[in-house]
Image (cartoon, rainbow, N blue to C red; front, side, top):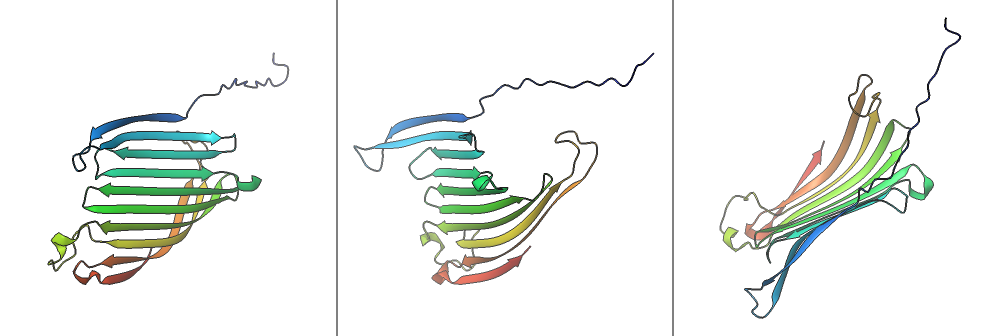
Length: 201
């Protein structure tokens, strides 16, 4: 015979877990182009999360295996700026491929948390690519795949997550909508004439 409704309350014992990453290697090689000097090579992977207990994340990824080629990826995120539902994210990427090309990317994003399920974003992105040496392209009539270009874009986005679970969802729905507008400029190698293309996605 049941005497009323029985209830159970789960108890969780949480323990801190280290998630920060710091891994790298540094190498010294003889510099073939400059006798008597050394070339610093290596790789660094640094990821720091929740610095100071304030939701501040920083990541650095760097790699250089020879003198002419290296890559650098930087990102940072500040959550709940000034104790508000505003978050800001920064990103910078650089890729230098020997004496062929140099790519750069910069991104800035503001996220405002409207509710526990919805977020609105404002963002801007800039990407640029430059040929380091154009001697071999002076006589071509068509742009090569590695032609110089500039890409600037601004946009707004909305993210809604109404799913019942983070993993293995059984119900609810979610969507992500982004609108962006910008200008892409390409440079023709002979004379470096610039062509502007307005884009809307």
